[in-house]
Length: 275
Image (cartoon, rainbow, N blue to C red; front, side, top):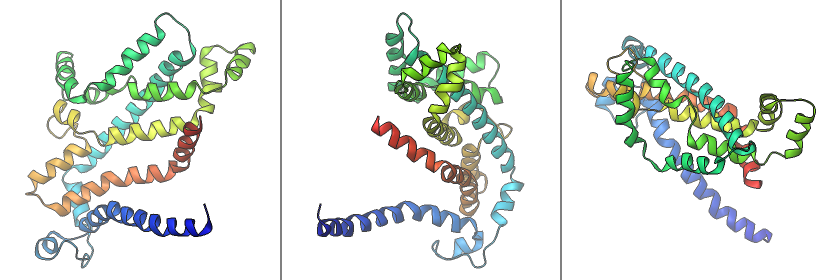
């Protein structure tokens, strides 16, 4: 590509990328501004008006509404599911990628086929199971269905584990390492980028989980952020400034997590793309 062609291409692509970025970021920026706007100003002036003056009354209102408990429940639920997902997905993926046993491939593809089943199909069976076990409206009902790995996570890790040179694993076994030692000291250090990516995907999906927590819990004891935010709309007569404050509280941890892990995510995309 000549210099002139690159210039023309950049003149077309960069404005399009900038426009896409503005369209994507504008709703978040408006939500943030609204969260610092008083309810009176929001109802009497344009939603695009700058907060005059900025106020934190919406955030103090969240504390009075018990939103802090929902934040703690969501963080604890996400942390436990993340730990379980990484632990059990790594073990299952290594078994499917490196261990040899009868029916391994058939079992893997049958398990992977469950990705085609919509999540809504399993809500009623899961609810009945939790109710029969006496776990309805408990913290463990939020956690258990997602604790022991997922088809997507196992598939993602299996494909990555298969790219690890067999010589590394064989060398570890010659040195006397057992299977668990190989996973901990060879496989996991070599798979850090994909593990970070999987961790971020898991955190985002569980942090934003709505349907299952809405079905399996009632009342405010085990509400998660998404359910608590939805409840604000009816509880406070659609006071959107309060809702936007709740939305901001829910989004900020994910944004900070993405910024902290972005280098590892980009690296995982590059490595998996090349391999």
